[in-house]
Length: 394
Image (tube, rainbow, N blue to C red; front, top):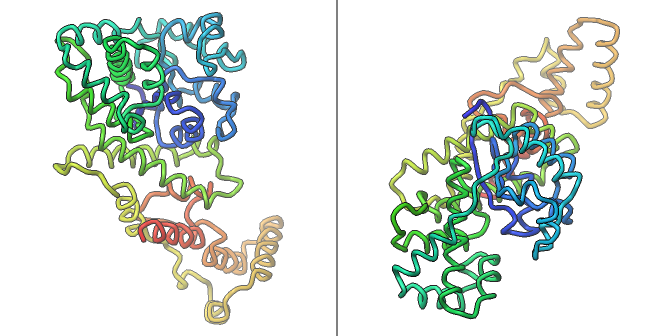
C-alpha cells in the first residue's frame, strides 16, 4: 500500500442507484482511498449527486478514488451503450478518462493502480456448483426472494435480476451469483471497511455466510451487520455536520487539506477498536468516540492573553457585531502599514475570543471543524459543533 492508504474503503455504489451517488461526496471524504466497483458515469448526473463529472475524474487521477471493474465495463463503449441497464451508458467526459487511466496503469503494481481491470467473474460457476451440491438451497433462496420480506433482505438489483428467471434452480443460481461476485469484489479491493449503505446488504452477506461454500469459494470475512451499522453512523454523522457548512467547506478543499487525513485516520482507529472488541454491536460508537474526542479538546484563548487593562473594560461589556467589524477593519489597516502595536494584539485576541479567528486547539482533532466549516477551531465554531453533538446525543 502507498501513503494514501490511510483508510481504504469499498462501495458497490451503483447497487444503491441515485441514493448511492447522493452519498458519494461523503464516501470520498471518509475514505483514503475510496474503491468503487464499476461506477456509473450516468448516475453522476443524478440530482442529488454533489460530485461533478470533472471533479470525479480529478479524484480518480489523484488516487482519492480507485475504480475496479471488468474489462468490458471499463474499456468497451459499445458494450456499455448496448447494456440493458440505463445507468451503463458511456459518458465520454468521464469514461474516456477512466479508460485512459486503466490502460496507463495496467503495467503498474496492483496497489498503485488507480483503475484496475479485474478478471472474468467466478460467481456463475461457483453458484452453479453450489446449487448442484446443495439442491435443498433452491427452496430456501426462492422463499427468501419471493417471500414477504424479500424487499428487506436482498439488494434491489439482485431481486430484479433473479426474478427474470422462472425456473427455481436458475433463480437460486442468480441469487448466489451476485453474492459471490460482490464478496470477490470486496476482496479484490483490499478494503479495510466496505461501505454497506443499506441494512439489506448486510443481510445479503449474512445469507452467504450461512451457506457452506464449496472449497476455494470466496466468502465474507467480516461481520456485515457491524459494517452496515458503522456505515450508517458515519454517513449520518457527516450529513448532520453539513448543516453547519459555510461556502469554504467544499469537498475539494477538504480532501486537499489536512482534514481528510485526520478524519480517515480517526475512522481507521474507530474501526480497529470495534474490530478488536468482543461486543457484537457497534451501536452509537462513532458519535460516542467523536464526543469523547471533542470533550478532550481544549481551546487556548484565556482572557489573560489580552494586553493591559483593556481586558476588564471590554471583557465585561462584551462585543457587538459592529465593534467586531471595526476591529477587523482596524487590523487590516495596522497590518497594511506595518504597525506592530499593542492595539493589534488586543484586537487579534478579542477576535479569537468572540470566535472570529482560529485559536490553539489541544487534545482533540481539527477534522470536524475543517469538514463542517472549512476552517480550524475557533470559540464560535467550537460552540456550534458542541451544540450539534449534544443534539445528536440527545
